[in-house]
Structure formats: C-alpha cells, structure tokens
Length: 61
Image (cartoon, rainbow, N blue to C red; front, side, top):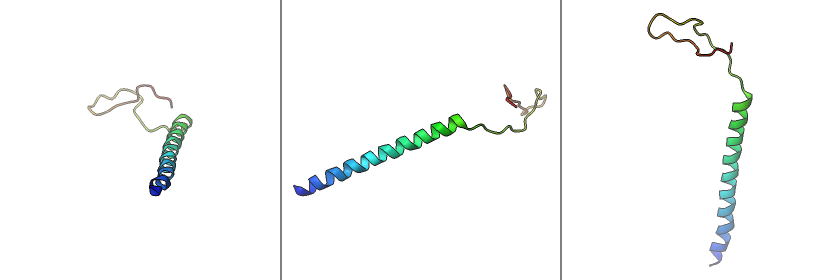
C-alpha cells in the first residue's frame, strides 16, 4: 500500500512536466512564426509561357 503513495506524486510530477514542456514548445513555435520574415526567393515576375513555370501570386519583394 505504501508504494502506491510514493508513485502517485512522481507520476503526477512527470505528467505536469510533460504538459509544461509541450506548452512551452508550442509557445516558442508560435512566437517564431509571428516574428520571422522569410527571405525573398528568385521567381518569375511575369507569367511563364511554358508548362511548369510559376510565379508568386502576390510578391512581397
């Protein structure tokens, strides 16, 4: 009976630590997504006439 009392707080602590790590990782990903600006890549400025040539729908560069 005493063993179950010793294991329960350990399991609770491990679950809480896992939830905090998961929440922290998601908060970091959200922060990076909002603050980063990807560099411009080379692309066609005008529509291509050949198959497989694409251009940006709305270029920010």
